[in-house]
Amino acid sequence: MDSARFRGTTVALVTPFQEGGAVDESKLKQLVDWQIDQGTDVILPMGTTGEASTLSVEEHRHVMELVVNHVAGRRPVICGAGNNATRDAVVMTQFAASAGADGVLSVGPYYNKPTQEGFYQHFKSIAESTELPIILYNVPGRTGSNISAETTLRLSQIQNIVAVKEASGDLSQISHILAGRPEDFLVLSGDDALTLPLLSLGADGAVSVVANQVPKLFHEMVHAAFAGNWGEAKDAHFRLLPLMEANFIESSPIPVKAGLALMGKLDDNYRLPLVKISEANREKLRSILAELGLI
Image: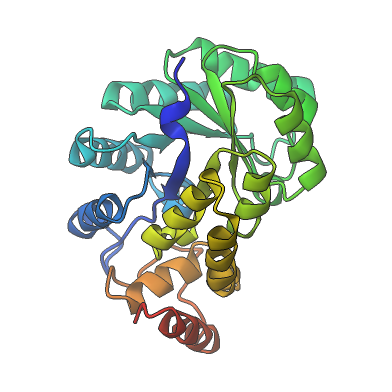
């Protein structure tokens, strides 16, 4: 199964909301077009950054379809389709397939805190339910439990499990995955600030939050590293580092959406329990965006 098309920069796309809370379809389409124009390699709606956990099943499905249809083959689309109930993850994965997604991002079950065997059986069941490529998503800070390197490598032997988005922040663990993976199994950084260090170890790209605000510069950083232009990549990394960090001064995706609002890309709306950024942190963000010439 060809995994190379998922290499490079994947934007973990935000979901714009109208003031009343409805999905702002017009601004979502505009964001997709801008991402493509700026060079982003892969579009990923309905991940954590897309506030998928606050959308109903019907809305989740609608956003999948809307983004797939609007991208219209211009880029691969990976849809967030994870759930902590395996049966529900299977249903959402099958819907992503019917919507025309090129792959799914499937998060480790949250709250349940499964054993390593539980992780394996969860993802194996999802893989057996579809022919779509599956990208594992390991984010212990969100889910409460870690998918070990050994389990990831075991899962990498399943034909349509083609990649992992690693957001554990554990460089030793990720190094073991990089060292032991099959040749066509991708390792994607799930932490913007660790993307360049992981690329130096052979990682294949990133699923990025900061790419929402600076798609072109982030794309240039990753592809400079691919080309061996490490000085250029390092300069871009250091230039972006303050924004990468600022995007997590409050619960993500609050800061990244606040930044996009300051840039005029969307309205600063969220769904509870997420709320608007504090004014002090908004000013910090404004200063960083101004320094980058984004506002």
